[in-house]
Each structure stands twice: as C-alpha cells, then as structure tokens.
Length: 165
Image (cartoon, rainbow, N blue to C red):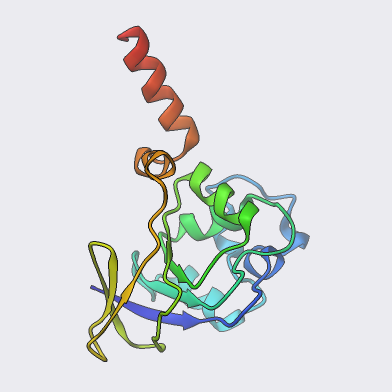
C-alpha cells in the first residue's frame, strides 16, 4: 500500500516536472534532485527522503505535456514515485516506457493527498474511501519494456536471448 503525497490538476508540463534551467544536468543519477523544483515543498520532501519510495503522485489530464525532454520521466523514476493520472501526453508516456517508469492510467480516479492507494490487478483501490477504479493497462509489448527496466535493458535481454549469450 502506498500513500498519495501530492495531487496535480490538468496539463502538468515537463517543465513543471523538470525545469528547463536544469537541462545542463541530464544524468539519471543527478536529475532527481530537481524533480518538481518549482514546487518547493514537494521537492524538499522528495530530496530529504520524507516520502518513501513507491509514494504516489496523482494528476488529472495530460500529465507530461510540453517539451519532449526525457529528463521529466528520469527525475520521477529516480525517486521511484508511482504516477497515477487520468491520461498522459503521448511523448512523455513513450519516454517513460523507454526509461522503465511504470505509469498508471486511471481515467476515473478519485483520491486526495493522504489517501492510501493499492494496485490490485487492473484496478486502483483507494483504501481510504473504499472505492475501486479501473485502469487502462499498457499494451503487452510496452509493458515488457517497462518490466525489463526500460528500452536499453529490454533490447539487451532480447539480443542475449537471440544469440544465447
């Protein structure tokens, strides 16, 4: 079970997730410190470790819109956050899959900061309210990439299988 630590509305851009002024820092080991940098309390709590790995952030529609910077997915992945949104911007979704960040699409989600959330199969269960919400799972091929840890580990695995390395 995980706790909702932050709730966003519609149209959260990649610049809000990973501000452009930090684009000189692109290493996945360094990007997490700038995750939601302009949301100072959230950033501070993420960087201090106050929110444990697996904590949930929720959002409404079009999460990750804007530029195509993959650091937006990388910075969230670095904190091992779970993102549940009603839907995602197309490029952000693909960048997240390529980097192994599992995003949960839950169009009817109702949750608030502090709620306890649990994933049960193809449902998100809000343990605080007792309500259950269906998810839209990723296609099998995309889920295989996420489960492998991203596109590079997935490709490496496939090559090793093919050549029996």
